[in-house]
Image (cartoon, rainbow, N blue to C red; front, side):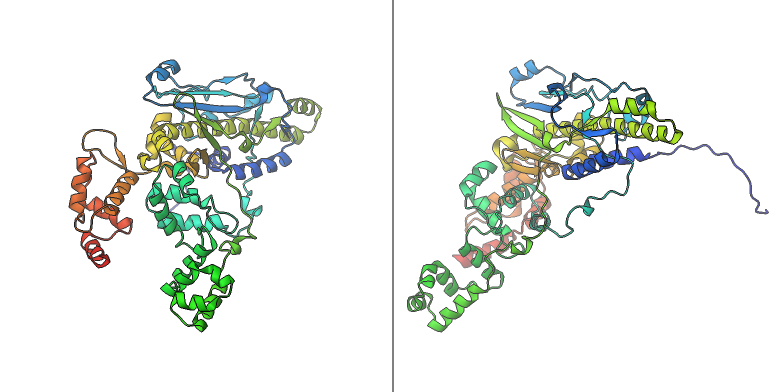
Length: 520
């Protein structure tokens, strides 16, 4: 058959990602720092937008807040009612003629068919003991520029890695237990400008709800990170950590550090006697101390650090409840200048000028709705996480529950991809520290007695506690650990215990028995 050109008609369906939809998805993933920078760029680009100077009346001040109640408090649940809702009071929509030209069909499907409610003002939920209230604004909302695709936050900040980023990357690799990772990140945020950790173990233990011994174990592991000496609590510990890193922390050096006052007094003869070495060796040891770095964070001092500003604030409320609210400081406030738009749209004569004004007005309206949806989505996801992890916030890291994206998505009737985007680069300030939302998700292990599932982290914690408290003459094998856990309602296999044990760097029962016999 000869190959000849021909015309064909073909009907097909495909998913079309409009530029507005692509930008809306990017908007949902933005951190509050990216958002603020992007808004500044939009204010410079769009003549119909102006900054809200805060002089507007109260109804123009947006507040989004939820209250999470203890599910065991039946009386409170009865008062709250069976349906959680979001009410936008004092809402006045933009009534300009050109607003009708917005593609509202695409807007309703903005989040990849995530919302099943008929409008953003109606969010049906099961009876979960939550009351959500909100006061909206008259054309007041965070705004973004959706026309430019060349914006990059990297153009505004240093490309060098900060100390926090450097350490956080190591923590994510070295800490397998998300509960330990939460503690490590909390301690990371306590470092001072020298890279030292305040010696407040009891305070940290009370804040996190974990034992001082567990904190010490995590600090010891953190002190193994780069740069050497990081997470030390004083100069002596800083030197000790660095000496251990190069295998120079011998008994003589330990004695020298324990009697550092004699070094200051240059009492070499007494130091020689205490350390069991001659005076020349003592002087060499002192010179070695002089080569150590007493400021582990010094290499990162001149690197621009972007501070962590939480997107969501959490505080204790009355009657065993938690108040969850958006941090309004992270929501840049801009206004659509309707008066200016009305005046200029009537005065322009050229077709291209009219099209320009119309396009800018449509973009501004789209952004108002998109950013309103972004704020609402962040609040809903944060509220549901707080509800699921109430025991963690109340009792501590051991009570971190198993949680996956699907659990949150089903409760708030959104797609898992939307929840994933919301939990990335979004932080919540809690009484137990500031955490990224994604750190509250972990795997689950079923209960053998039909109760709630156990988080993998809590099971690892129990395994670690059992092994730490075992007696030298009664070393626990993996089978014995399985029997103990199953007796406590945790349905777990032997191979899972072995996998968790190995992930925590704990040797087998045979090896532990040999080690403890040597120590005896």
